[in-house]
Image: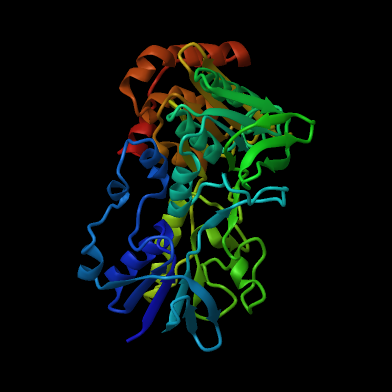
Length: 443
């Protein structure tokens, strides 16, 4: 019987295993050094904050794996012999495979800062990081977070929940300025400002981390010469593919493991999925490495088809993502860059008092919608994906915006305001209506 081995039990690896089992009777083994059982990584912050128990983050009962004939090994893979199809485990065991799926995840970035390995300095990605953060933050009152992305804001919320004061070092002029346009950053900063105990230091970069006599962090120094006293440092300046132990092997690696359209690597019967995979020729509008939950799930589904004998190209569709900045919900669909391109126009509607913002980007020439960022409102993913794919004009998007509404109360209050604002800004004469063609689209 052919043996499929999957290294990594995150969403990508587990989705692959479940779908391979649905399609085949192959022997399946998942190996993970992090935890024995799959859990929801995005829920780790709520465990720290006391909203959930760790066991509540596990979507399957422990006997699920045996019932579905998926073997679990809680061990660390030290090395892979791609010529002999063997894995060397830290326990000393050797594992043979016929097909190998690498679902290795990410690790927090470190950039060689002096003091980055001191006690009390860490990133946040894994269950081990959560356990370490529990230990590192016991009894402390002050922390510094380096890097202003989604992980950084999650860590800030976690620390504030325990009364720990946070200083945020952001190297850009505005929050998440390398991703969000100016207006979008402003509404996030407005949300952050509501929470006492957090101070943002813009255009400040970490120079080094200082320690006390016991080898524990007690301050950070910035490149501008500012010194901030602290008892904990969170390194949240992004993540990178967890592939260093495979460098120097026959596997082709750039930043991540290079994969083809079907997620195969340069080595026969070896595949890579999830955070560690780097698409050699990504689809238009997509990045080579996309380290988000849903792309891992889709890659797991795709590679399962190929392993089962139904070669399938990975096709993630229109880019989307969602997150929360404290209480402010955020969604993005398509392409909304931090700066407009020459062939793009934008339309922004905002109600900062009620903390709502819609930021549309569309083609200058044909007015086809390219993307939207939305804060404080929920929109339907499938509707905007179709609009972007079919290059619906911004006029028709706005006229039919109620069809994308996920909250019935929203358009009752704001739809007319959005249309009027667009009319005044673009000298248009849009009138609310519901074209017959739209009824076919949503049926």
